Length: 157
Figure 1: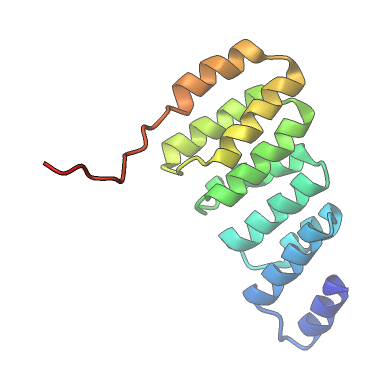
Figure 2: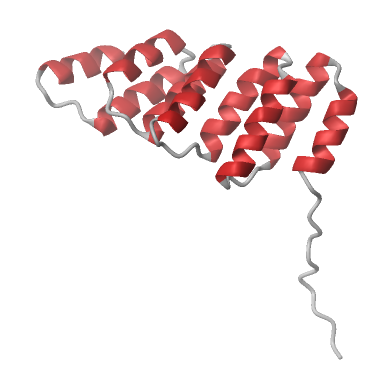
């Protein structure tokens, strides 16, 4: 329905970046990767539209496309943010693509994207699916350092 509405808006020259990003997001929520990728070809280039398309690829079990789009973002000068990286990593994790997962985490590090629990969990899942437990343990130490939580209770003198 979102794709049909967008086509009607486009025929009236009323479709803009927000309309495209909403339509691609709707496709992502519905797991319609093909429709999202088709819309991406017509949409103005933006981090939001690309992120939504990567999310659609994750939900549609299309890790090749998710990785391709993440790479395209860099080539287009778009910032690969946490949701886009996590969606691509999650798409890879379902297939046990731990090596690709490490590359995503390295790119996040290079781009200054702060990793989250979801990042760590998706990476561990990729290693688990592939049976790469030693890789997971090594990468956890290397890319997911434990940060000590500060005690918020101050003691008196």
